Image (tube, rainbow, N blue to C red):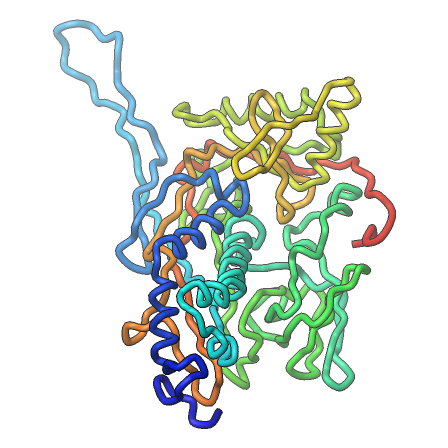
Length: 446
C-alpha cells in the first residue's frame, strides 16, 4: 500500500480513505461516545466519582483566592458606643498549573479497509481502540489524583547496570512515599504501578538529571520489572521512576509526568500546597495523626475522626469518605469480625462498588493508596480545575490523521486539568497503621 494518503486509495468497500475517516470522525464526535469516555474515567474509582464540582480556568496557569482566616463579627457590645473593628477574613492568592493529559486512538489500515458495512461496522472496529483511550485516560487520571506523588511512580531499590542484547535491566522498586509500615505494606501489590509497554524515565535521586529511559517488557512476581533501556548507563539506587516518552535528552527531547498535586500531596501538614507555604498556616494544614504501629480499631478511628472535626474550619466539615489500601481496610474488617459483627453485605456504592462503613461513612480501598495510611476525606472540598474538558484534538477539522509512511490512522483525546482542594484543613489522615499478615501463595512476595 504505497503512497498512502488521505483520499488517495479506493478501499475494498468501494469508498476512499477520506470517506472512511470522515465517517469515523463523525462517530467519534457523537455525544454518547464522548460522554461514555469521560464518564468511565470520572467514575473509575469511588474517590473520583465523588468529585462533583469543577472550575474553568482562563489559561494554563490558574490563580484563585484561598481563605486562610474567617471573618468574625463582634457581639455583646454596649449600646450607644462606636462600632468596633470587625475581624476580617483573610485570603491568599494561590497559583497552579493545569496539567496536560492525552490518550491515543489508533486504527490500522486493514481494520478500516475491512469495515465494509454501515456505521455499525465502524463502531465495531472502534471498540478496542476506544477501550485503549479509556484505559489511557484512566491510568493518567488515577496516578494524578491518588498514586503518583509529584509524578514519581516508585523508587529504584538497588542500582542496576543494563546488559544483554537488547539491553535490559531487572529493577526492584520501593514505594515513593518514604515510609515502610511493616506487614501492612506487604499486601500493597506492586503490579498496579506498572503495565507492559509503559514508557519510563529514571531521574537522579536528588536532581533533574535523566539517568536512563526505557520500556517495561516484563513484570515479575518477585517484585521486579524488566525494562528495555536506551543505553548501558547505570540506574542508581533510589532513582526516581516517572512515566514519560522513553527518550533520553541526548537523543531527543524528553517529557515526563511531574508536579502532580494529587491527594497524597494535598492531605498533609508540611511543605507547600500548590504555591503556598503551609508553615504556621492551620488553614493549609490537614490533620495528620499516627497510629504508632497499632492495628485499626473503632476506638482509634473514632479518636482520629474527633480530632479532625475539632481542627476543621467549622463549615461542612464532616468527612464523607474513608480511603486506604486493601490491607488497612482488612484490618478494620478483622476488628469487626473479632466482635462477631456482620460485615456482609457491605455498604453499597454507585457503579456496583462496595465498602465497609464506619459511623455511616463508606470506607473504600484503592490499590494505589500509600501503605499504612487511612484518609478521612471531605468530598465537598475537592474540585477539578479545567482549562479544557476531555475532547478530541481536531487538526484541520479532523480527528483522525494518517502519519507519514504508515498504513494507519491516529487521533488524540486531550484535556488540561488539575485536582485542587479548597479546604485542606477539613481533610485528615492516620499514618503508621500495621499488623496485617500477607497470605502466602503466588505473588505473596510482591
